[in-house]
Image 1 (tube, one colour):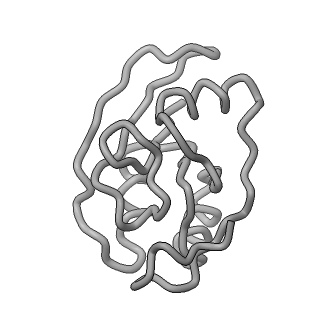
Image 2 (cartoon, rainbow, N blue to C red):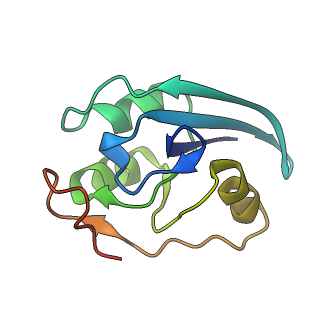
Image 3 (tube, rainbow, N blue to C red):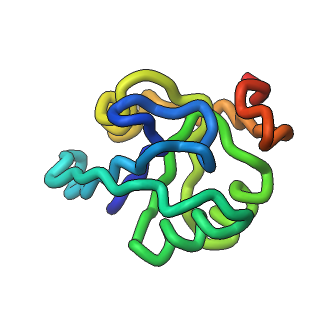
Length: 118
């Protein structure tokens, strides 16, 4: 399994599309076996969910996310966890322990990324 965390360095970002980087965690069983950081290749509607699907992501973790991105992830069978905060690796560990649940936080104002519903 591969989990991506929309991040600002090692912290979960509050808006998926405007993140600085994606921290990618390879999981075997319930353990992180590899992690890497890749830069956000750019925020264009519909691009990032397809980009992450193409690199084999199974789960995306973010603070908030636009409804269009959520729909594309759902169509691709990628689990969406929103409402996360704090350290990216800790968020993945909580997810693996079954302790990180999505709040369903959907951003409606893309140009105002501080206005996501909490």
